[in-house]
Image (tube, rainbow, N blue to C red; front, side, top):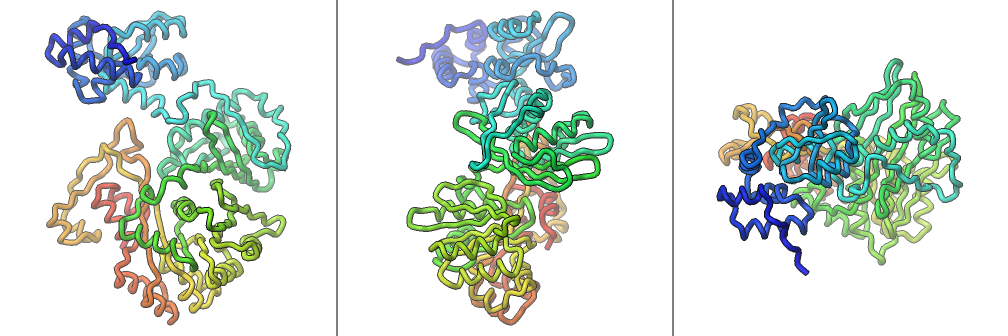
Length: 567
């Protein structure tokens, strides 16, 4: 049974009279809007059928009201928490300010009386509508509430997250003392949800002498989001430690833990938690572990076509080493997990040693190293080789023992994937040499080295900027680039982004160990010599790859300078 069009309202009649839409199109749009569960005005603007300005002008004329510019409204006047998020989103109406016993509600369709009635019922305050442009209203709602996440739409303001037991050997924790502290519980739940909604990677809870700060790392940059009373510091720490199954009585030594939160019937979010005793309490950092990141596929990582071909070629080799390098937070784990996900087939036995296991992958044997009981990377790797593996992943090569076992595994018919903390692909060779690995072992066992960084991606609101030609040439662009009409973009900033940036894009240096590079390694060449040969072989360094991202309009020159060391 097809959806029936809603009766033509006064506003729609006016749009037809003004020649902005005909009757047939209006009825069709009404049906489609009902199917999509969108207000008709929102549907018309979203589908670019009628502009928001034209609809607002028609509504103002029809109902004799003025159009309010939301940009002129003082954000401090917005009554926080008065109307539930669900009600605002359902009715597409936003409470702007309260004067006496009247609450003024922004609407883009004055015929939307149900919104006013429901808001009045919830608040007990008399409501009055204020006419605003549809595009401004949508942006205002998203700015104040955040964009709705597909998996998080069922959350209201009074969210109570379910804590799942992470350690199967551990009984349910006694959470009676901290969980009774309802304001602290609600505050932490809200912080966790806000971080998930913003797409943040880390949460920092930091106590100082006279203040307490909560900061989120979003798109690689830290932002302060809350400053609760400093007196709550011990209770916040205790609650987070209970959630991550740590010893709440131990405040003198760092602790590691894990939180698994069930945020809906189908979705769980994992957090890696670390505490550090500092001068005025305990600093606690939570890293959000996004299991979906490993499922994105290689195309979502931002590799250029030639780099992607080298990546897949190295993965498909039966033996050898595949190394990913870069600083903390550069996306090494996601690059490795993406590779493991590609290799994860019933025909292959895959074992990983990680500290800690960040993302749970079905079909892969994942082992968490535990230094307290003597299970370090080298011990785990030694054990793997007795488990008939095809592919081995070592979380990080930190010492000569781990490096030697990994190389022996690569030389005896196994594919070995691992990470190192170095700045570039050539420096990875010198780092392993400095550890004590013989040059001939490196030259014969390593297949591919990927060095990477994450640069902030420009939002769609980006704007073209004028940069002098000589400055561009100094940056590393060629005269051919300038002659081809090179356009440089910079951040502008809108309600949907953070200072002109939204999301991140990977910048990579992908080096295949060719016979020429192997020869330089065998001759004990330093990183500068290896780098020169890499250039001659046609492998772009990180800076050159970053400039390519600038040419494509994906990031800015400022970001290139921030994440790379220059040419």
